[in-house]
Image (cartoon, rainbow, N blue to C red; front, side):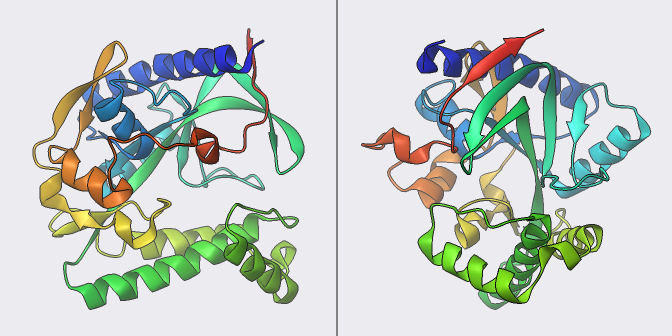
Length: 273
C-alpha cells in the first residue's frame, strides 16, 4: 500500500473512533477540547493536518478523572488503555484504541504492530504567579522524567540530542528495571493535578511537547466553540488564535519540511478485520 494512501486510511479510521468518543463525551457531560495538532488541523485544514497520524484531545482534570473511573467500572464502551493497567511499558496519558484497525510501523529501529489510537490528555490547573508556575513545572518535569525512565527497558533515542545525553547519563545511575513503575506513575500523576482544574486562572497540558509554553489562561478556553473537522464539528478553545500562536508561532504557515514532524513512522500497513 502506498504510504500516503495508508496514512489517509489511518486518519479515516481515527475519524471513526473520534466520532464514537465525541458521542460518548457529549452524552455524559464530559468536556473535551481538540488540542495540539488536532486543534491546528481544525483551524488551518478543517480536518487532519495532511502529514499527521494521530488525534489529540484534552479534558479538564475533574472530568478526566471521572471518565477514567467510568472506564475502570466498565461504564465506558470505548476501548481505553492507560497507566492503571498492570502492564510494562504502558503509556501516559489514556489512549482510546481501535478494536479492529492496526498499524505496523518502525519505532526506535524495531517493528511494532499496534492498534491505532487517540491520545486523551488531562488538562490541569496552575496558578497565575510565574514563580509558582516554575516550581510546579520543575516538580512535574522531574516526576515525568522518573516515570519515563521507569518505563524504559533499554536506551531509546529521541530527536533531541541534549535530552539523549541526559537520558544516557541518568540510565547509568538509575536502573529502570529496579524502579517501581506504579509508584513513579502515582507520584507523577499527583504532581500534575496538585491544583486541580476548576478555580485556577491558568491550565496546562503537562504531557505536551512545548513544556511551559503549554501554560495558558483558562480564559482562552472561553465557552468553547465548534469548528469543522473533516465531516464533523469538534469542541475547540474559543480563543484558539492566542493559544496556537503561543504554541506554534505563525501557525497558519505550514512548515517547509513536514517530514520533521513525523511520529517515527517509517511504514504504515493497515489491517482491518
